[in-house]
Picture (spheres, rainbow, N blue to C red):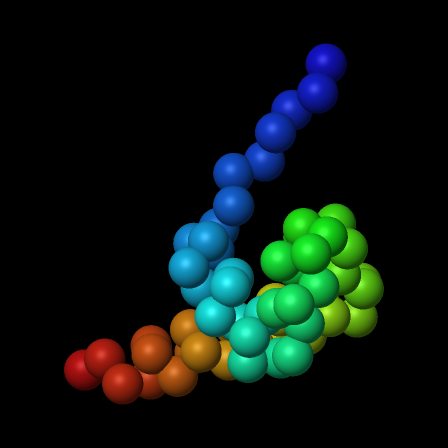
Length: 59
């Protein structure tokens, strides 16, 4: 049986990160499966950085 995972990141955030990291065009043309593993890792790293920054701003 195939189990589908729910995404932790919103689609909007993923697209924003892809634009910031420079592989948005690849995602548009080939979908998320077309990006390199390194790009996916960088996307996760950047999402973690943003979450840590947001948490640090909260009182």
